[in-house]
Image (tube, rainbow, N blue to C red; front, side, top):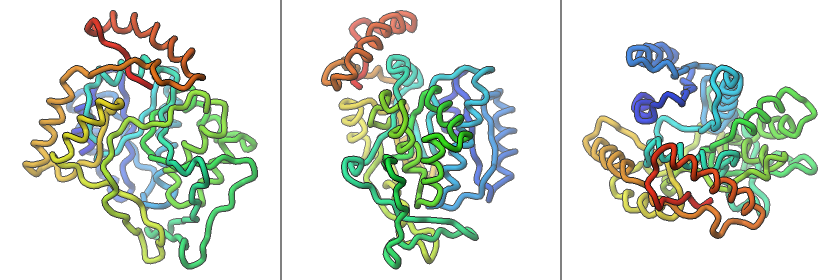
Length: 329
């Protein structure tokens, strides 16, 4: 799956930091050989953690990839770090993704749950011996919130700027920083990959450059999976993508910018091959762009107007058709 995703997103300006589950270490060499055979020098595979769903190892793997990306910035300047899964697939062209991010450069896309307005659940969770332990019902165990700390949950599929990624990476090394406080708070929570980046950006100055939206189209939750006999919470998982969802993807893309969908499984099945073909065909069509300044929050108007003015030069450089406007924020 990850090979198909890399091939579909392959571009000279991209670099792919791929974490391979520690349960399958041979896949690291296989992926490296595959990339070398195709001349994909921008694929960086690694295997640092043996992942158990619900615990903090997915978060640790994500942050390790972000730190590696930050460390390479001097030799390879990049603007955005986008978290993807091997079950993701693009629903737009690479070019349209570049145009969108260029116009909105400086903004972080972190989708947050509605509970941010009230109080998000904070169940405790740990992993041991390949199982996850959470005692949500038996002991009502919740992680107490540190005084003054804003806690937020949301989708883990974020798109972060280099500036914020660097702030996270450096903050983790400073024990008295807000980032380090959020990190310590996250590690004993259940499924912290759905709260760390959200809470981090809510507690630092970069919150002024936050857009409460992710770049994915995600189907409704299909099932909650438990990861051990003592896992009383369970991780949420979306329904498997089928051709039946194509009208919904089209409608979603017309309303808001969407560049990825999930989850795609069983790539060898004919119906999945047909779905991928139709997604690729739809992605090849020029996007319907909308004015980024309309209906934008007042505090964003000045900032976004600068993005719109700067977009004219970008559109000319990349020969974007006349009359095309920029995505609404």
